[in-house]
Length: 338
Image (cartoon, rainbow, N blue to C red):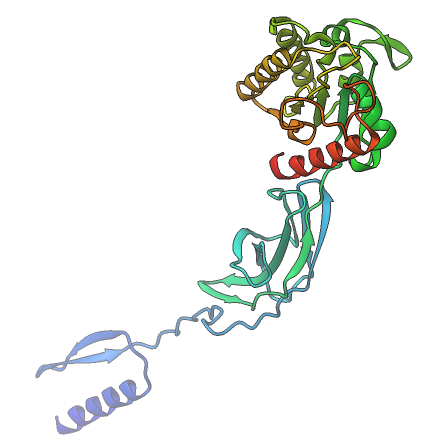
C-alpha cells in the first residue's frame, strides 16, 4: 500500500512539473488528486506595439493655381499614412487646420486675391490604436492670385478726355466707351458702336466686355430739367442689363460736375445739377453693388461752380490736369471702397 501511494505521488509531481495542465480527478480510495493533461499551447499574434513612431517632416511647395485657388503639395514621408495641412495669414501667426488627407496635395479654394498665406504640413501615422506625428514642415508662402478685372469707363465727352489724357491712371486693359453729346437715353437706344462687326448701342458695347466694374460718367447733356425720373429709369435699365451679364458687377455712378457760372456750353443750372446728383446717390444707396462717388469737391470753387483752374475754356469741359487729378482720385477711392 505504501508503495502504491508513493508511486502515485511521484507520478502526480512529475506531471505537474512537466506543465501539462488540463485538470482531471483520480480517486485512490483515500482522497482526490488533480492531474494535468498534455495540451498544445495557443499561439498569440503579435500586433504593432504602442511605441514612439518617428516621422520626418514633409517638404512643401505652394503655387497659385487660378484666382482664389492655391495648390499645396509635398513629398511622401516614409511610414506616414495621412497628412494634415495648416494655414496662417502671417508667418508667425496662428496656423489653423485646413484638412486631413491621405493624398499628397491639396487645393485651398478659400483664398482672397492679393492676400498672403503661409502653409505647413504634418505627416501622420495611425495604426492599431497607435499614432505618430512629425513636426510641422517649414512654412511656405504665397500671395493669392488676383484676377485682372474687366473694367469699363463709359459716358460722354468727359470719358473721351480721360482716354486722351489720363488712360495710364487706370488698370491695364481698361475699356473706354464714349460718345460726345450723348444722353443716358441715347446710350441705351442709339447704335453708334460696333460689337463683333455689328452696330450696337452704348450699353450693348459695355456689356460685350462682360465687365466686373463699370464707371458711368453721363448725364450732363440731359440734366437741364427738374425731372430726374427718365434719367433714373435709364440707369435702372442699364444696371439690369449689366447684372444679367454678370450678377456681381460693380457699378459706380459718378455725379455731374460743377460748371462755370457764365458757361458758354449748354449746361444745367446749379439747382438742377444738385437735384440730379441727389437722385444718383439715392439710386446707388437703394441698389446692390451700385456705388456713388462724389468727386465734385475737386472742381468746386466753394460756391458751387467750376474752379477756373479746372475750366477747359467753356465753363463745362475740364483741363488735362483736372482730368488726371479726377482719375487719380477715382482710383484711390476704388481701392478703399470696392
